[in-house]
Image (cartoon, rainbow, N blue to C red; front, side, top):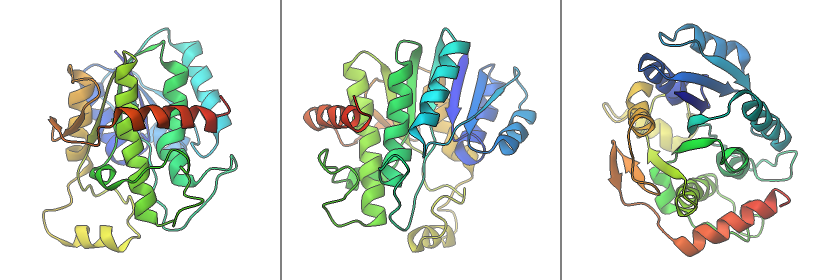
Amino acid sequence: MITVITGASAGIGAAAAGRLSALGHEVVLVGRDAVRLKAVAGGLTGPKAEVLTCDFTSLDDVRRLAGVLRERYERIDVLANNAGVHSKRRQVTGDGHELMFQVNHLAPFLLTHSLTDRVDKVVTTTSMAGNTGRLDPGDLSRERRRWNAWMQYGDTKQANMLFTQALATRGVRATCFHPGIIRTGFAGDTLLMRFYLAIPGVAKPPEAGARTLVHLASSEGEAGRYYVKEKPARGRADHDLAERLWTASLSALGG
């Protein structure tokens, strides 16, 4: 099986790569840092892994990655959209989009959309924060609404859930999941994450966060559903909003 994992240089992505490789998956590790990716690849016990670099803050780089994957693989069994970012301050990418919106939603949307005819299954790492999202397809970068880091993050994680639903309506076997509070350094500079990390037993190791990703990549998940601890859970289901997000995402990409 060919499994592409973004955000694979550390944390949940690296842990998932290790487990899937041990299960016999031929993993393609995607991330920004080639050195760290090669270190992850060197520790795998299964089939030889491929390393591909990509910076999701550049949509042209995402297009390049999609082109490389199309050139090298006639079929991709699993695309794991795991890369993500949290930023305490508002940043705008060179493409003109708010950073979290681009990295957490628009880049994986572009990558997935570019590979739909090659991919059998899509698994996206989202967050329970998506249940607090107030996504507005007409203001995805919060240019007209008050910008707050956790509000924007929640919007992007809600977008992951809605994107999963929209993919399922188009016949794609797509699922998404909440990994839990994980000790990866993600959002480690925020008071909220410091609070969680300070409570004994709350934050789990990356291997725990990767379990549901591995489960969904290796089994028949229910298309369009949101998962927590390897089981379907209640997420933000809204067919109309999912379709509006799809249209707005294509528009943001110039489509």
